[in-house]
Figure 1: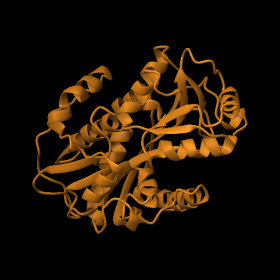
Figure 2: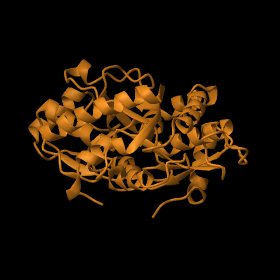
Figure 3: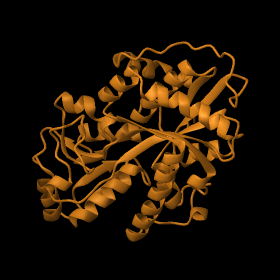
Figure 4: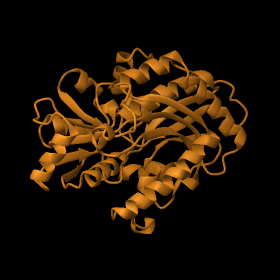
Length: 334
């Protein structure tokens, strides 16, 4: 079932309040040219209310509402590695009333067979932020570095358990890439995004491959330890955590999030949305909240964002074919 703004409001309001980012009641006003006259823009989020993706989406929605004559509301449509939400938005009118908080999952969901349409069913509007996949263990775990953890997997092939956010997710693909780079085997455990960290804290798995927004408070609180950042450069939110490359594993698996709209949306509509996103991402409130959430503002306009998505889609398809995860979309979930 979709979690609406009202149903998720309590937990998200607490999260945003803790970040010092106040929600403002924005009354729909006179819409800008190219935007829906009814005053509402619905942002589909592919993950549950309260998740890192959800909280950052609501930060963006609030900022966009401040800058448009429309109120941007979040509706959660999780499931099937993002396929449920993507499929819903792709079927909506291309009039600016439906937007999606998209990510690398558009490629992984399609090429895993879960989603019949691919990125070409959407028009990119803007990239908003990037995130660094990280490998985390409990603070009392015996491993202090990535090489130590890989050595343990070599000594106990197929016995160490590692959680991720679900089959076909970016964290799943990142885990597959990590295991391949290390030449090791592990038990891959798919969870819903909201279950990954509790499963690690509850000792149901030995480690998790996750994005930092879900882990920041537990790392600073001393409950979890990060072994590696799986990107080319250290994450500025965790400057003391070495990259996988620094530890001998050539990985660069940065995740991105942005906004897209159904194919056929007019350039006027895209330009209006892009301008509101650019102003929001550059605002002090958004930048400060991003630091606290462990994400990095990284605005790109529509044209550049389109090139990033297309290039990465080819790379994702090649990688998934290489590791045996490529499936035909018609065999997947409709």
